[in-house]
Length: 337
Image (cartoon, helix red, strand yellow):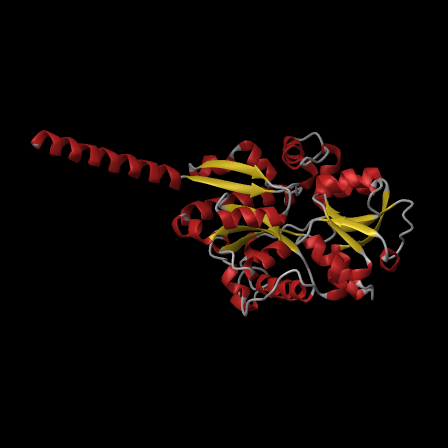
């Protein structure tokens, strides 16, 4: 009996230790979902900078759209994900427990509505009866609807197809769509045989409804990984600074640009021009009211609210939150340099 009790006790201790070790190991791992956006921190992905600074095991998972990113965050398949302001606004409206903590970029002119040559589209009004391919619930979906509405075009008079960037390129080459609203690397490719009708920067200037790409973290992961997130944000800030402080060094042949091309799927020769279309916001600005700081009055919270209200108006989501500041956390960017 004593032997049995001793064995059981020892087994229990060993099991507890094993479980504890496993739990500890799990806390030092993170899965980050990313898309094909052309941004400086792709070089940090290539060099393993996050792993070096944090000691975490980092797994990167490439996803095809912002909608896929928020679904993965909601399911726990990833802990951190990058997407545009529109999918994050939709996710928060639907109760996904996440926090936007880093502005990946101010989209500016890095997203554009392009009409295929020969499609007979020269203005937004010409899109009546035409087919536009774009990812649903994305920043381009939001801005396409805003642009059409601002131009007095009934959105129901335009056939909008839900296509991810690789599917857009295939449909474009087959001639199945007349136009697309997309970002690089797909944007650079469709420009070769198409005409830019309007950019996101122009739409924002006309309507006051700007868009941005960001990184968000699941609230459950954020609770136990404060130090990791602070170090991760510093990696992001350093990656942006290495580009903005010395853009001339980011040539098509440079290791930085080659890494961006590898991780995004872009052509190396097009990366420098693609990067130049974005505005990358330094941490000091991100921490302020004009971006993540300021609670309900922050630009990010207000932008998410305005985006959600528009998506509800269009029937994309069913309800909006009274305050989107609950989905914005400036804590880590406030500590970055």
